[in-house]
Each structure stands twice: as C-alpha cells, then as structure tokens.
Length: 173
Image: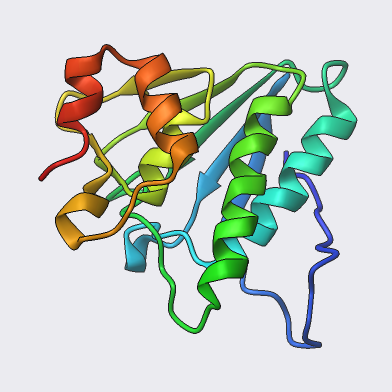
C-alpha cells in the first residue's frame, strides 16, 4: 500500500512533482528517492517531501511502522545535492533538519545503498542507524575535492560511524 502525504510546504497550485516515493510493506516503511534522471540528487523539493514523510512516519511509529528503509531508485542511491534554483542557506538548513529527522524517528532507519551515495546522498546514508550496500556501491563526501568545507555534523557522524581510516577515505582530496 501507499501513504498519502499532503505537503505543508506546497507553494503552487500545480500538481506536485513527487521526488520521493513512500510505500509500506507490512510494518516497514520504504522511502525511495525517485529522481533517476538526476541520479536521485537531492533538491529542495526532495528535502521538503522527506520532512513531510518523516512527520507522517513519526505519527504512525512504532505502532503501525516498526522500521524504515531509505533507498534510491536505480541507478544510484543519491549522487548528491541538486542546488539548481535554490538559495544555498535554506537548502543547508532543511538538509540539516532532514538529517536530524531520521535520527529522531522512534524506529530503526536502514539505508539500502545500491550505486553511488555522494555528498548529500552520503549524508542521508550516514544519518541512518544501519547501512547495507551492494559491493559496487560508493559512499563519499567529495566536497574537499571541490574546495568546499565539510560541515561539522558530517565529520562527527563519519568519525562515530566508521573507523578513522574509512572516514578519511570517504573524503577524497
């Protein structure tokens, strides 16, 4: 079955373009990033949908939902952030809310990673309680390669979830 989510963030009267699919299989909510044409890059609309979905899951957990699986529609988990037409400050604020939101759900959140999880996609993956990946998946925060500063939450989370050598390797220079 599916959940019906009405966004509180709608700003237009046009039908919303859904960038996240929410299904349930028994007591498991399956949240799928659904922008395969952009390799599931996270744009501002995706962040707003994820916030709404987190609220809906939180309201139904742990009674009707016992676990959440976060994944991406092939070919990627998420290739990063899509900042097209977005004010960077608001995007960063909403991304931080989404990352904290997965950590505050009253049920375990599992990232099912197939393909690349880069930048904001890697942040989504490390915000979960558990990560399961295919052998060819890549998790990384290539911001340093682009001359960008990696935020403190990402650095702390990488260091706490992975050994130091693995955390360093996920930040290519």
